[in-house]
Length: 275
Image 1 (cartoon, rainbow, N blue to C red):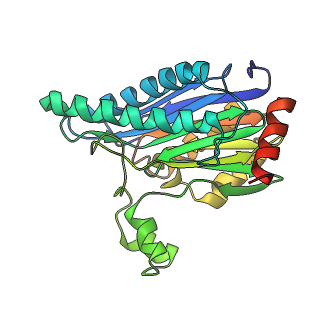
Image 2 (image 1 turned 30 degrees about the vertical axis):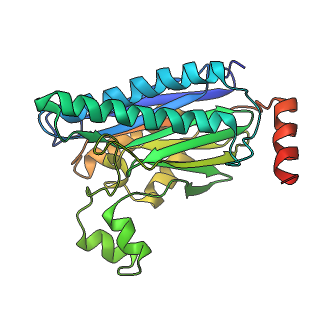
């Protein structure tokens, strides 16, 4: 199904105020309902290489993988849709590609990247992520962070050693506990959720949420939601006004209308309730 009329997608990336170049990469494919955001890290321009490899390889891998899989079916072993498994497998393969590139090129040694991927299909959003780039959902004027950061801050919070406020005040913000390309294997978080018309999804690098609090992101999304391009402009503007200490990348997706495949949707529900 062509989703270009079902989804409104806006994609924006800004270098910020402090960094000499942009190590974030974003790519979208509205026809296939695919959105990908990566925040690179490494030595001289190696972060740019890692994030660019991630988004381009994942875009290609998912596009080709979907052609070969049986869409609209649930894998009985994992409980995930086949489409979701294609997303995860592609991220794992892209990790190997980045890792091998880093080994082969001395200038790229140690490079890595975060990743957050969203694939819309059959009124479902398949989400894969590694690192601290985030995906939020605005529904009925309530903002929810859907992904969970793979970061030292989040780990300290999870262990009960700090409150969220204490962790953010006392811990460096850019220390991730998982990233693509650092090791030969990677642990990818995979999730699915049903989407509804008028939902707005925000994918962002930490250059946004480190500078702009969730409450302010919520207010901005709500205030400018009629115009996603303006919403993206305002979020970047606010991050830069707060210091723009990192690159700022944003993908916004509005669900315009239902895009379910009746047969596929009913089969998913039947399979899940018959387990």
